[in-house]
Image (cartoon, rainbow, N blue to C red; front, side):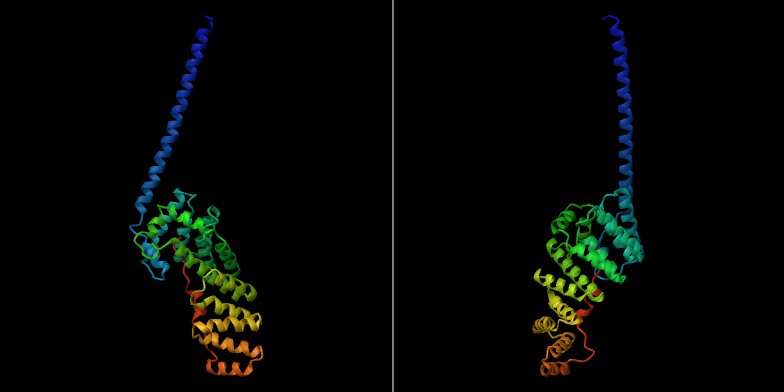
Length: 303
């Protein structure tokens, strides 16, 4: 037993020094991690814009000084470096890149944002807007279909849990301080609008009409837009009875010279020639609907 005591003492002493060394190493690693976090936070705070209001101005179709846009770009670029798993950082970096004219980079960053949070409505929506602007209608259809299938509860949760980014976007901005559900509904209406217009330009009229009906059923039919586009889609797919029904419903709500012309043409195709001629004589040959330009006016939103 006496012989074991020195051995146990020596073993215990060595074990003590091993634990002490491991503790020192752990503290060193933790200390470096804390220093790095503080350094990254200092860099972000130095780049932090005083207000995010200019982002809302861009979304409203206004312009901002190039230097201001560049400052936002550098901030969100640094944010993605410091917090590579923060989806909203990539989203707003893509937003800035779009307005810097770097469309491919914008698309890539929205793809990275979607890889982190695939159920957040605004990422595929903004990507769909970019695809539409580039006349990449097949890609736009895919992006916008993903947008309308997203879960609105995820949208609300993501926005409310983002004090560093989205809370600052909304701060002091009346439009973005409105009810989150109302914002989402406006975005959803715009997504259906772009989706229908993309399908229409691809001449996939039956699909366009199906999404018009879906939008109407979801109470998104502001200004009777989807009733009009459903009538047009039915007309070009040679479903003239359906075209006449949709266009008549639209004309019951508004005076639309473009819709009136197509309504007359649809009536002629189903044999109501006399009524059709009366309508066509009252509608200019080159008449267009003000609703034809709605999709081209939809902007990216600061997400």
